[in-house]
Amino acid sequence: MPNRAERQAKECDLSEESLYKYCPSSHRHHVSNTAEYIYFVLQEIDPATGSAVAEARIRVSDLEELRAVLACDSPQLSGSWHLDPDDLERLGAICIPPRELDRRLNRIESWHPIREVPYLVHTNFELPLMLEGRKPLAVFHDAYPAEWLSETLARLDPFVRSGRLVRHVIDTPFTEAEHARFPDFQGWRRAFFSLPGEEWRIDAFLLLSKVFAKTGWNESLVRMEGSLLGDEDWQNDWWIERKSKHRTSTSSIV
Image (tube, rainbow, N blue to C red; front, top):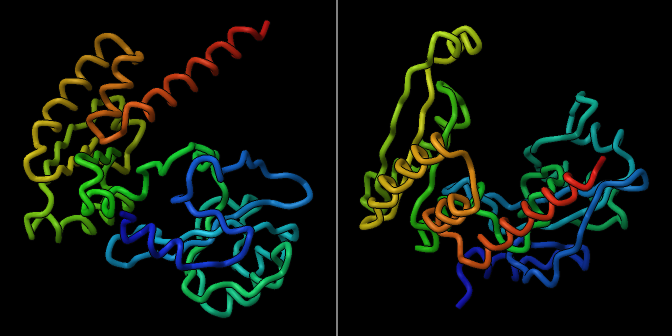
């Protein structure tokens, strides 16, 4: 049975160029930005979870026009931007081909190679996946205070208070060298969120981190980390095979 995100994605029929993360892998194509046009992704963001419930891929060739629509002065159009209805109308006019865009779309972000993975990567979808019981553990890690981390924790906290999620935060002080390198931060923060009854995964993840510190990263740890976070075996296989191919291609360069 399709979940709520999948149902909304299928209902939002934008055009034949639409590309939803919820489509089967056979519908996904290798995409790279070219001089003729550049891909971007339009999203409908659910305010309750901060995640996209529908997405559509568009092509744009006139980047100067796009910068004007987004009021972006940066030479690199990398990141995400909020869209209002007027933005959508102007954006639709510079799409290839031009089209009328669905009014529910309220954010645009640049294309990223992670979208070529043949399944819905959990990044930025942690909360809805956990609320649907499809992801048992989420881990967020950065130096603190970090705005994105504070916003993410604040978005998950109501579900902790209601008992739908379990939270565990570990703060590690900086070393003197780290303090000198990152003077605006206080230390490292790791925030763990699990489904009730899955708290054991937090302890297992911490043990995995200790093993990694001693042995370095390897295939077994990749598989263990993915399994703890809710990846299926075939998804772990995909990452391991990808890393192996990359290692092989790198070693062949003289």
